[in-house]
Length: 317
Image 1: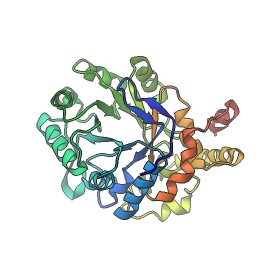
Image 2: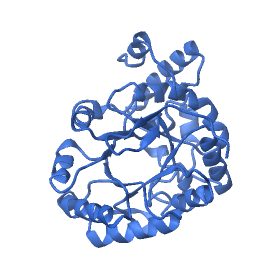
Image 3: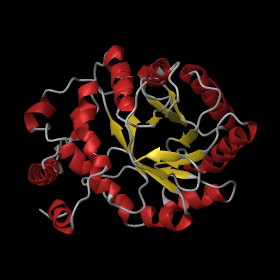
Image 4: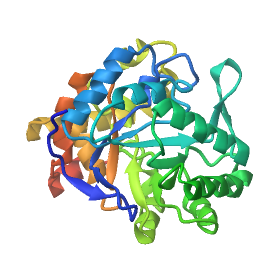
């Protein structure tokens, strides 16, 4: 596979040199589960992964929960025989419950069993980065993190990190074993991580890969009230983006569109570049469902936003 070159940076202190953009595999898990994205063709997903790799992306972030194994299986099919193989990051702690809903578990036996199944679905000998998906139940964080450290000691995973943890929960985990990476939700419409979490991660030398930098599609320039209303019933965004916050989200999306027009790039690329503008962030997870979506977003890897651009994007409504 012929690949282009993208800028890389070390993910925290892991020694992993990752591209500033990574392939996000949440949506390719498809619909039919609690946080699905509606119908998805596996052929489109595999083509999207291959094209992203051709454009230079060198890591994929998935999870066992995405389609209850479907995303990992598709990733495994896409990377089979690919050399050099991209880094593969996945997650534990969400298991399938009634009606394909989410059940949280940080029990040791559950996490060890999940890791074994993820390795099989992905077709790898070890997971490059294994992350606790959510810190729930809170009382079981220590048990779950000890199991993650055990997997690393066994060589089944190379690095361990957390997702959706707050600073206090990370400190509790660090008392057992170092937290190497953090995956927070971070975008122009979800800035809560700026207050404490991102500064904490930067001070501690914890690598950060931000998820949903385009606000789960809200900041791509394609989202409207009409499109939201027309989303499939099994697309979780249909309900999540309704309510009083929607007006503010759409106003932010319009500012992103204005800056993108001035810079001659896609709105999604501006939204991602804003996330990467934060010094604490090493990489951004970019969800792709079709090959063509990747082309216009690659500009984010090298796009430098000026002070005026940032001020406009962050303006209060």
